[in-house]
Image 1: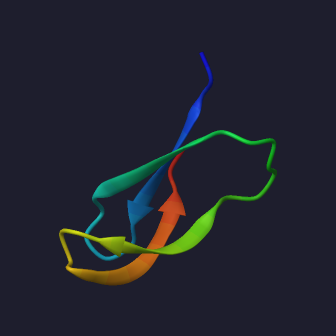
Image 2: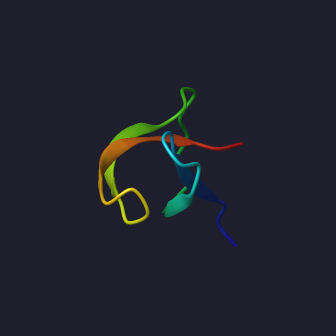
Length: 47
């Protein structure tokens, strides 16, 4: 089973998105829509 990356909203801390893990040395940071904040915010990869 492949591991998954979980993206966490920087504003409210909710975990909204999951992606399949790629061989990446840096943490993934994307600007995505947060349904809890109801706006686009920065989402960072959690450990």
